[in-house]
Structure formats: C-alpha cells, structure tokens
Length: 392
Image (tube, rainbow, N blue to C red; front, side, top):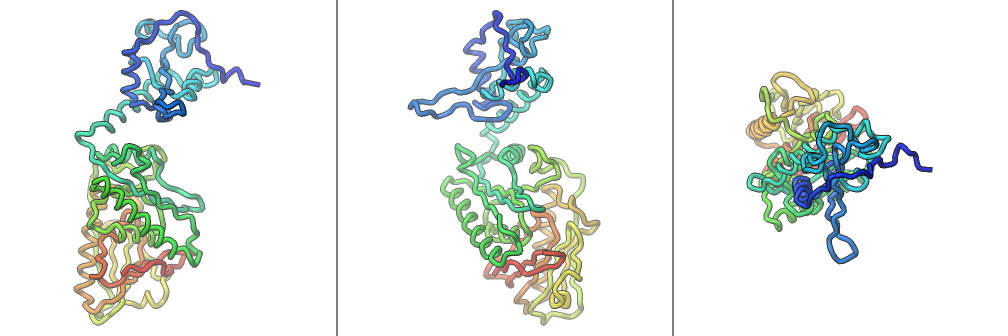
C-alpha cells in the first residue's frame, strides 16, 4: 500500500503556464543536470534520438490553492512561472520535493539555496576561458577496515575551485582508478601493488598525452609505500596537481584552503657521527608524528640516521595547505641533496615515514631513477615497520 505522505501534492487549479523561453533559461543555467542529484537529463534512448528526461519544477507552488507544494506565498502567480522560481529536476527528485512526507525538508529556502549553489557551480565549471583541462588519477584503499576513496562530486568540486576541469567530454573518460583491495599482510600484496600502480599510471599518462592535456590531478588514499611508489611512477617530469583530503565529509573534503596563515619550515638532522663510508642509512620523515626507533628492525636503528621533521610541531595539519606541501617538497629535495653529499658511498636508503599521503607522493616524485641510491620503503604493521617496496 502506498503511504499517502509520499504522494505528490500538485494542485490541479488554473496556473500560469511556463513559457518556452523560461524553460530554456532553466535548462541552460542547470547545464542539463538535476540541481539536487546532478543526474544528466539529456539522455540517449533506444528511439534513435536524444530525449529530454528532466522536469521543470516550481519552488513556490504554481498556485496558492490548498495542497499546492510550497504554495503559501505572497509571490504572485505570473512570477511563479518565471525562471527564478523554477528548478530543473529529474523525475525522482521532482516527486520527492513535492511529496507530503518531505514538505518540511524541501522548503522554499532550501530549494532556493540548492538551485543557487548548483547554478554557481555550472557558471564556474563552464568558464572555459580560465579552466585548464586535466586528467584525474584516483587511488582508493582500505582505511581502518573500510574501502575509501574520493567521490566524483568531491573531485569535481576540488578541480573547479583549483581552476581545472576534466580533459574529456565525460569525466569518466578522464579518470583512471587505482583500487587496492588486498590486505597489507598478504605476501603478494606489494608485488601486485607495483604492477597495478605502474599499469594505471602508464594509462593516465598515455590518455593525457593523446588528449594533449598537460596536467594530471591526483586524489590518493593508501599506505605510505604505495603512495611513494605512485609519486615515483608519476615522477617530476609530469605536471602533477596533488589534492589532500581534510577531515570534512562533504563535497569540499578534497579542496585546498585558499588562504594560509603560515608556511611550515622543516629541519634535516644527520646523526651518529662520522659515517661518510656508510653504504646504507636510515632516512626518517616524521610529520604527522615522530618515528619511533623502537618500532624499527634493530639493524635499521643502528644505522647512521637522517631525520626530516617540522621545525615547530608534529600533527596531521602540518601540510593542510598547498603552500605547506610546496614547502615540504623543497625541504625534501634539499634533504636528499644533503644525504648524497654526506654519504658519497651510499648504495641503499631505508625510508621510514610517518606523514600525510601528499608528502609520501612528493617523496616518490623527487626520486631520480638510475641516478640515486635504491630506496626501500617501510610500512607500519602491528606497531612494527617492515620492508614493503623498493625503488631503484
């Protein structure tokens, strides 16, 4: 039995018809998408032509008669049939906003705000004179037992405010995914990871080159060794825009803040005395928290050590802005130069990092293959660090 609260409450009284010119305005301002769920409403069908499947809906009801959705208003009837009072909706969302059971939720103010936000996005995203095309590389991974990755909406918002847009007609054609479902403890995990990451990075670079797009945007969640590997595969010869997730859980989650109060500085310290003859060293990067030596294999803890840390304090927000990430990237390259100068016979670097994802990617991008010592990247498992991936 149908719940009467879910039934549409449209009024059948005489209303002012919406003119074709007003409908065109509604469709154009919404870019052919439902302003609530963003479904594309110009759909290909089996009838050998394109069909419009959207519906032009009223915010303030078409009449002020009893039962008209949001009809109790001082707005006169002719104004109710004009574009400022109209929204482009898919059939499902149209039924929702006009149902009795959801009348309090879909009120006039809420719908006006949704319309304004959607149309503002459209204006920004279609400003092709200023938006630069990009291809997207998205990495998802298991976090505390649940698979996580950036959503399509979150990526679209982050790109838009950064002056970027997908470099293909359909955003799906400009997005390459790397999904890492395997547990870190499996023996085959890291070998499979190297294969998957290499294949997908090659794909996004090839697709971008064929489309003549210069920039790859990266939205990545994953273990530190995988993120370092991702940066290594991308290298610093490709124009890469790295995005960082915040603790927000809405469409703005992957946006970089536009304003930064301060930019962090980083220290590089070389410890354990005269070790210029060393062929192996321990290189630690502690940003989110310090690296605990007691969690390292004893052989590593006894090696000459180079530490890269923030000057002020540790924490998850040290690299919360793009300027902060740039500062870390510069400090990291300087640290690596100091390492090579201090250890001229160096063959192997054991890298242990407690750092945000964006820092791990920058670490990998800075590594110069065939010119620098091989790097073994460690992963923390059960409060111990174990070797995971080698770069050479």
